[in-house]
Image 1 (cartoon, one colour):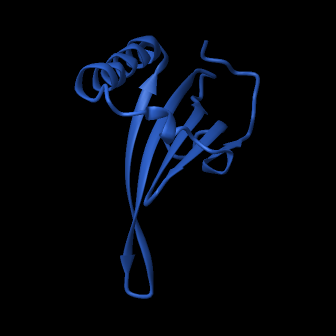
Image 2: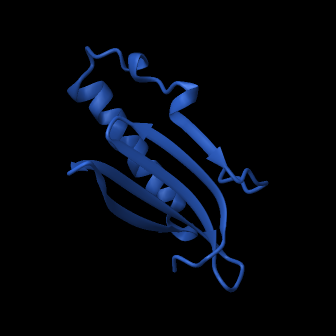
Length: 106
């Protein structure tokens, strides 16, 4: 599946981790999302990268987003209500968009 056309990509840098949100197309012109976590590990004079990838298909988009939002809201309101999460808001240099397209998930 790696040879599928990439339509849109957003990279989020988070310390030693980088998250990639990539929209790809199938042969039948359908679209799906891959979410990749890449972790950098020192090795010798350089680094190695450990990657984990998820494939998310259109029929699961809404369920996935709802479950993610519910889980994050639970942590913020029930488990860590004293934490000011605004201190973790992303800065412009942490998020990169590649291949902007007209595709919208809303």
